[in-house]
Amino acid sequence: MTLYILRRLAAGVMLALVILLIVFLLISSSFDDTARTMLGQGATPESTAALVEARGWDRPVIVQYVEWIWHAVQGDLGQSAFTSLPVRSAVVDRLAVTLSLIVPALLITAILSVLLGVWAASHGGVIDRFAQGISLVGHIFPALLLAIGLVVLFGVELGWLPATGYVRFGDDTLGWLRSITIPVIVLVIPGVANMSAQVRGRMIDELNRDYVRTLRTRGISSRSIVYKHALRNAGSPALTVMSLEFIQMFGAALIIENVFALPGFGSYAFNASLQGDIPVILGISVFGVALVTVVHLVTDILNGWLNPKARVH
Image 1 (cartoon, rainbow, N blue to C red):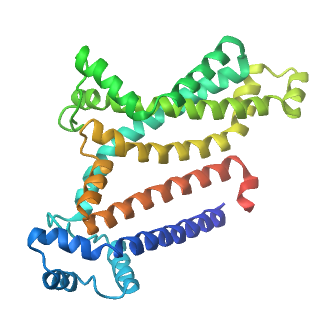
Image 2 (cartoon, rainbow, N blue to C red; image 1 turned 60 degrees about the vertical axis):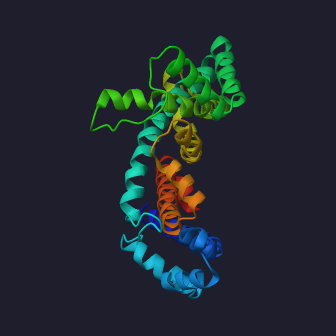
Image 3 (tube, one colour; image 1 turned 45 degrees about the vertical axis):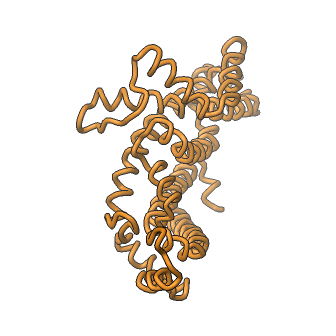
């Protein structure tokens, strides 16, 4: 198992370095544009060239990339080109806001999806049709439309929850819970629609396998078959789906945080992209790639634990 973990870790690090190199190469083409934006309307070719040289953006790209990676590994992501604030602290602060949405949403999605998928597969009938209906509704309504609808209903018409804004957990726990309720619901509904369908399909496949029929002939209870045997075998694909769902939620945060005016990772990335703030964009890329790499690594480890055959790949 240790060798398997080391292999997956090495593969994850290499993939992260390649992705960051691609991002750096793409961003390097906009150094001149960023310099002109920083200088404003009075920018001249000479002043732009001087700023590019002062920032070191005129050096070979590969040299800049290696130097940037070296500093990033040490925790130094530089300063914002526009605010001069440290990128690392700014990204960490906003990432905490985003994770305070995604983590509760993912936990709720996982619990509801497993319960709904298992019940639908094992009982059928009304429960199965209900699960399929939830899946259909979740796929029909786009996240943006769903967010606006919930804001109008619960924030404007009923006034039960704040329509926009964010309260930090340490400042006011109840206020934090109220401020994230609608965004979390927006993340959970499509998440349950996707994941419950995957769990249901996998459980149906498992319950139709030969070993399940053998267990039934031996008098093993249906509850034991479903939860001790079939669910464990269906757990590996479910974990993979959950990791993908995490990444999808991370991407959806870009839309949701702008709709609800949340000071999170997605809105920060959006504003940095509009400004062309290269150090911030690169810092966001580091944290984003690292987070996705860690999620995939944890998923691979759990899959290897649940399914020893996966360790040979």
